[in-house]
Image 1 (cartoon, rainbow over the protein chains, first blue to last red):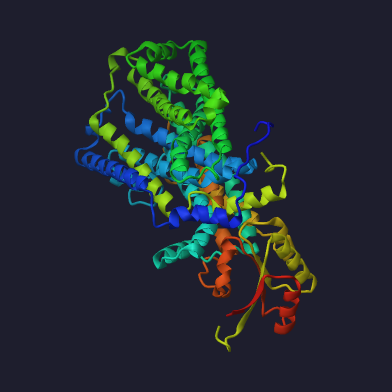
Image 2: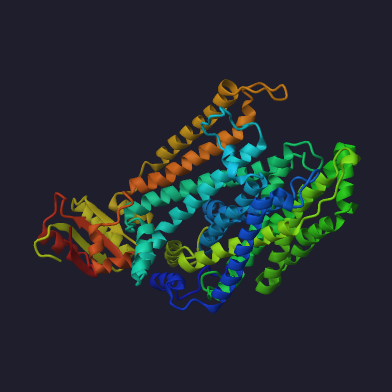
Length: 456
Length: 179
């Protein structure tokens, strides 16, 4: 972070009691904001649309989607990569920034981790449905079976199964471990007997004892150390789904780092898209300060530039390797039938986010919110460009074709946004969205280092 | 509390972390061992004062990761070389570079599961009943309360003396905790 005088991470005048009450108050209040009900209702309606789309898909089969040869990997894989990328910011915030002692992450990590979980849940749906017969999806896992068959462990698609299921498991566990002391606080604050039971059971008898904290600290540190290589490996493996093949536009070694940077880019964009309204709605300006917003915008800008470098290298390598198929694919990108997607991607991911160089724009939440949505769209387009443009024209012109997504492609995609928002709003309503104990710890540290919070 | 119920120990409440750390150190100097401190956030200094500053979790996690990677790779080797040999693209059956990603994910999974379940086991959780929860003030431990408990099982424990000593450390209050 810059060495300039820092804005505080917590507004002055907070005490251990006040931060605890403020955060647990969001959940334990009797007055849920009306906005919560409105958004939840809309999200729930979209979730129903998702279930409807899945039902129709299961009744009729994959034919209701626009996928066909040559484009066999349409929206399903685009959406899968998009959602899983969004999830990665949560792990970056909770694990990598934890290892780097970035204390500013404390007020946003719980929220971002929840986002990870829900995004992975949405992501997982797509390959599951894309296999065509989801009721046979367990064939992907190695298990003793009467057919005496094994999955093909040399296939990147198998690696993906292991990477994504490990990622989902570890993210959920890491999240729960961080949550235990906070649900214990909720247990102690709750007045309603059902709430007391609910949080009491989840808290597992946590007593805030020094012995508990000691082991808990070690476990958090180790899990952060494990989640960091995990998150990098997951998106690398996702990129191997493409890069191991020989399709022009996919067969390139830059994919793993470029996918990881893109994942973090889109993930931070999604954190901002969700965090800015949340902060406003629940008046969390004292805990999620301008400095958090500013830092997240800076991370977005930096990863955006890495992604821009990736685009540039893709173009240069097409020219450098001299393969006519690679060159043909590149020209098909910039002036083929899907040219608007490519240029919209450049506009959304490279051109517009440059406004974040100015501090005025980073601190203007409306501008930043707009940019974050633009980046979300841009990152979706990136995956569309990679999947669809590379597939629609391969080596033999006689096998070229155009992909048209159908209504059911779109309804399932928009439906998963409803699924995501439904889970997120249930989370905000029932679980402290900001880590209470880490905020108390931060308060303690800032009182003992009056010159500002260390480590930033 | 029921007058005749056996005593778990004493629970003293302190004003802040520094007072709690000082009190824990003094209790240890006096020879008390079976005690525990409670604070609303983790503190290294408190762990040291109370004598809980090491734990074996990291070693367990290392073993968990090792078991994970060995079993992951063995599974792939067994499937691809022994049980279901299937030659693809002229590659050797034991095409180990292609087995790395899955073995790696199994390592992370094994280590992470060990870290989480190891944490719960080492902390003796889940344990939904504990005598200290009998004291209504103890709910502050998850907000802004700092507590020190000393068990009646401790060799040095003597209700009157221990209580008097705790009182001399400047607590907000000292409670008798029933079993």
